[in-house]
Amino acid sequence: MSTVPVLTHGVMEAGGSYNLHAKVPAGGGDLALPYLGKAAQSCTLPPEDFPVVIADYGSSQGKNSLAPMRAAIRCLRMRVGSERAVIVSHVDQHANDFNTLFEVLHNHPERYTLNDPHVFPFAIGRSFYESVFPREQVNLGWCSYAAVWLSRIPALIPGHFISHVSTGEARAAFARQAADDWKLFLSLRAAELRDGGRLVVVLPGLNDAGVTGFEPLFDCANTVLEKLAHEHVITVDERKQMVLGAYPRRRAQLFEPFNADGQFQSLSVEHYELFDLPDAAWADYQLDGNAEAFVRRHAAFFRAIFVPSLASAISDSSRRQAFAENLEQELKQCLSGVRTPLHSFVQVMVLAKRGPAVTPSPRSNTQK
Image 1: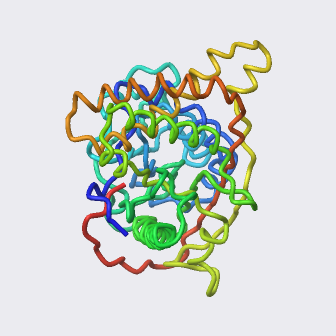
Image 2: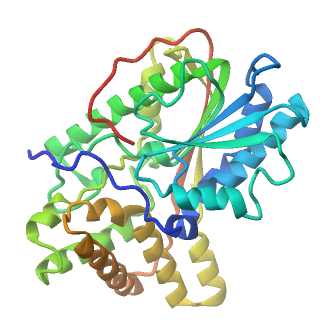
């Protein structure tokens, strides 16, 4: 079994593309807002002369963080009043498009700082598979869809690019990596949360049959990749190296660290729920019959979120851009022949910290 030489996945497509096309993660995050509100109401607050700290783990370009942060701040204001300082720290990889994030935080009409001068946004360019805050500084954490990405890609996937269709040694390698990364993520967050803090994690998931809901889109994209390799748009070796470092987990995998006594590193699960997430693009298509708009939305979604990771197998930057353009156009053609909804699944976990956390051991070469 070969190991992928590029150990990290790509960040989301820059220039605000993710903000424009990440409607699926936005919809999944919306389902978790009531649980984030309850977490904001129940988390322990710091002493009055300290600011309340909210951590947004995996913020990307910021637009999908606006509604969650507004909801959390609104609930916190009911507890602490209008004068208390609230810090919101957006965490993502150093290569993230922070320019777009800051533009959103400064100018978006639904920005959470609007009419609240005592909210202070920060940004941290670091993997959340590392420590990103000093110990016991975070009161409320939010992580929506980002923890589906592994810290590294453990194996190539013959014939495809997604982990849940892999078999044999590759499948086992991804399962091990996902288990290790989940424990590391939880350990680091436990160290950063104050006692009584809350962490809300939103993740794409699998149903009981092991289905993500994205299979039609991924299979079309896989067909397109083979076509691009056959037409020499990409090389055969580049195609082999194209693997997504995303791993949708089952409920049992998320709960595995808590199995012994219901706690892991001072964290316990307060709530878990699995939701169906209907495809908004399909709903619009059923109403207006605009097939071109439907396939365009699905292709743009795939490009904004997944193509940067696939393109990381291409060393030349100009060829990466051409690859993205070619893939999107070919993907629209493929999707036109298999118009079907992407009814995916969303998992929401609310974690509470009780007691001191054990400092996790450092690990090299880990990135979010």
